[in-house]
Image 1 (spheres, helix red, strand yellow):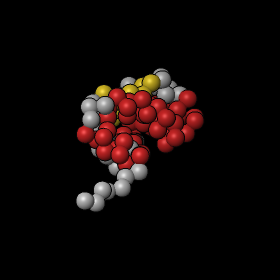
Image 2: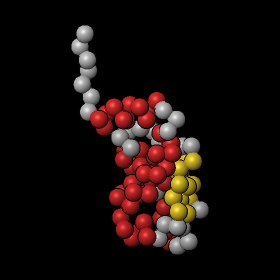
Image 3: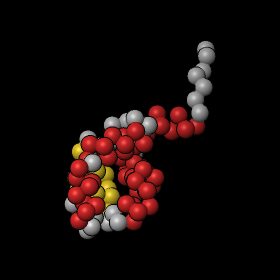
Length: 96
């Protein structure tokens, strides 16, 4: 019997993909991912960012930023999903 070799990261990712814990963990990671993808300036002016199910909620009180984020909703969804190793984590983006 040959046992497949997995890295610890691969094993954890496989577990999370089959686990109910996946979304809560991704919800915790989203702020870090957002800062890494969008940079310090946009991150600083984002009041809140949350994942609920497969919907990403972004809140900002800065009108020009809100307008830019509205135009970039599809790109944001694509970049967030890429950051989560290509898994479809986000299906919809709502800007408030």
